[in-house]
Amino acid sequence: MSVDTAGYGIWIVIAVMAIVTLATRLGGVFIMGFVPINERVEQFISAMSGSVLIAVLTPLAINGDNGARLALLTTAIIMLVFKKPLLAIGVGIIVAALVRQFPLIF
Amino acid sequence: MSNPQQIITGQNIYSGFKQLIPLSLFVVIFGLAFGLAATQVGLDNGVILAMSASVFAGASQFATLELWGEQVSLIPVMITVFAINARHLLMGASLQPHLAHLSTAKRYGAVLLVSDANWAMSLQAINKGKQGLGVLIGGGIALWFFWSLGTLLGLYFGNLINDPFSLGLDMVMACFLLAMVVDGDKNLRIFCIWSLAALSSLLAYWYLPPNSHVIVGALAGGTLGAIWIGKKHEC
Image (cartoon, rainbow over all chains, first blue to last red; front, side, top):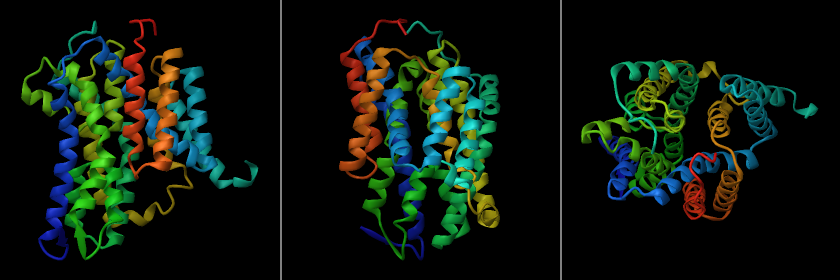
C-alpha cells in the first residue's frame, strides 16, 4: 500500500501517523478499563512504569558515546546525593558538552 | 490506592503548564532540529507543521523521515510509528486507575497529550500522594505548544543550532527521565525489577526487531513486579 507524496497523498501519510499515535495514547486507558484492578495488577503497573523509563535509557547508556554515559552517570549521582532534579539535569548536560568538546581528556 | 482522589481544575492545569515550561524550552530545540531535518527531506512547511501539531511524538516523527520518498508505503510507516509510540499504551495503562472515577470525556482528554516528560512527572506526583493530573494535562499543553513552535522556528532558523550534539543538548530528555527514575522508590525489589528491565531491553535492542526494546523491557519489569509482590509502603 503506497501513496504518492506529490499530491494529497502526503496528507494521508500524516493522518495515518496521527491516528496511530492517538490510538497509542488513548489505548492504554481503554484497555485497562476492562481489567479489574487488584493488588497484583497494581504492582504490575507500578513496576512497569519505572521499567518503561529504564528500558528507554539503558540502550542509550550502553550504546551512547562517553558524553552520553557520563552525563547519565552524573545526573544519577547528583539525584541520589542532593535530590535536586534541575541541578542534576543541568550538570549532566554540561558534562556531556565538556566531554564532547574535550574528548581526549576522558 | 490510599492516595487522594485525583481532580482536574483549571488552576492545577495552569500550574502544571508552568511547571513544564523550563523543560519545554529545550523541547523548542528538538522541534527546531525536527523542522530543519524535515525541510531537508523535502517536505513542505505546512505538511511539517501539521505533522508536529497532530502527531506530537518526536522520536517517531524523526524515524518516519527515513522512510520518506516520492512514494511512501503506509504499512512500514504504521509499524514504525506504532512500535516507537507503543510505550504510550503502557503510560495510559499506568494512569488509568487514577482516572477511573472521571467522566469518559475527561478520562480520555487527560491522556490526549501524554508523552514521556509530563507522564513521568504526573505519576511521580501521584505516587507521592499529590495531585498529578494538572501536570499531565497542563504540562502536555506546554510540551505540545513548544514542540510545534520549535518546529515552526526550525523551518526558518534551523541552521542556527548546527550542532546540538556537541553542546550536550541531545541529553536533556534522557537526563530528565533518569532524574525522574532515581527520584522514585528504591529498595531491593525495585532494584531487581529495574535490572531485569534493563537487561531485557538491551537484549531486545540487540536481537529483536527495531524499536521493540521499550515494550519488552517494560513488560519484563512489570511481570517481575506482579510475581514478586512488594509490601505496601515498605519502599
